[in-house]
Amino acid sequence: MKSLFLSFLFLCLSSFGYAQKFRIPNKKKSDKIHFKLINNLIIIPVEVNGVKLSFLLDTGVSKPIIFNVLHISDSLKFKESETIFLMGLGDGEPIEASKSINNVVKIGEVINLHQDFYAINNSDLNLAPRLGIPVHGIIGYDLFKDLTIEINYSRKFIRLTEPENFKYKPNRKSEKLHLEFYSNKPYINAEVTIKEKNIPVKLLIDSGGSDALWLFEDDSLNIHAGERYFNDFLGHGLSGSVFGKRSKVDGFNLKRFNLKQVNVAYPDSSSIIMAKNHKERNGSLSGNILKRFNVIFDYPKGFVTFKRNGYFKEKFNYNHSGIELAHDGVRLVKEVDDSNRRLKNSNLQNDTGGNNQLVVNVETHYKLVLKPAYAIVELRKNSPADLAGLRIGDLILTVNNKPAYRFSLQEITNKFYDDVGKRVKLKIERKGVVRDYSFTLKSPY
Image (cartoon, rainbow, N blue to C red; front, side):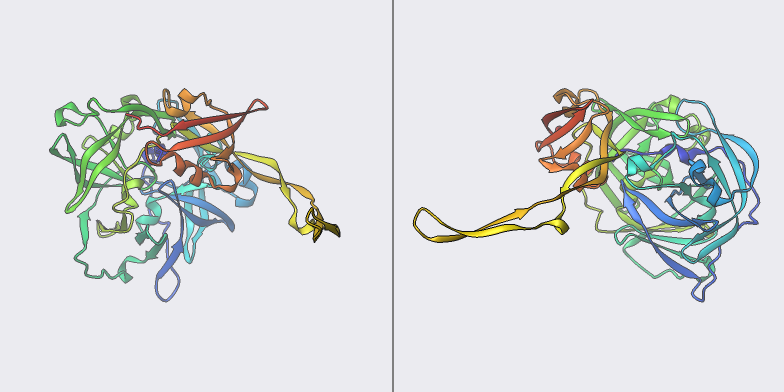
């Protein structure tokens, strides 16, 4: 999948005291929260000052962020204490944010009475169009540092437990790895195989990125894209868009777990200046690999445990169409109103053979309803969709002769990751004109 919004991982925030703390005030000192898995990203329900919101669970962010806060600021009753500037991925300028203190945060039965947030009013930082559901913020280190957190990707729930109450179950099928921390972000040692050579790498664990693997090109380590790659948009950063090369590595190894032909992105060096503050870092391990395991994060003890799940053998595919879609508001759609269908008249008539037949006339009523609209927001140059004539801004009306609004954003996107050779038909609207296009899915390199 496209790597969305990865820049939030690399915030340059100073460390603060830990007076704020997440607690679980029930007898078990544990709670289970169901989440939505969209584009390999975990979206959890979070209540802030009594307002129910949705947050991205991101192991790579040091302080929680709320964005587009102007839409909900009155309800949140934020207490602002200072204005700061944040810098992240991308080659743009730092953005302005307000620090808000002493907020009450609840995640299920988990609660923190004195949580800080960084509120960003930049309308460009909006995850909802790309994910197809409302997302109001990001939370990471402040939650992970206080609790032992089990992420069950296969059954789509997280279990949060106070560390002293968490009990590990002996399991020969899992692997426990040591965590290292730099600027409150977790790193592990792994291994990539490039041109049959095994290369040790230190990677940020980044549940806030939807790609499989990011690597920083380094000739001294023989880490580079090689000859088989394609240039692509990698995602939106806190400080701008991120571009780079996409390819595959022969293998990726976490101790005895081995994945073959893994998608990898090599971001442009100008976009990752902040990420390279940690000199030993070689890249990021993200959602398209993490989802293949059920993972236990134990920050207090400094370990992470991986156990393979049903996603493990899922093939690593790229977008074979070149299209990146986003939710683009709603449109009025004419639908049959079944509740208002009624018999208009009926009568017996003779057919040509002299037999009687009952003719029933039904009066059909229609209604106008609002349905989600999807538009092309990125289009890879020389991709099948680009060569077919599709353009950025095109509104998708039908997909393979079925109305687009009957699909979720992720369901349509998944069709673009289907097998090479499959045919895709799209009906689109461009500047009020309806057009038909079709193309064959093709490997991008």
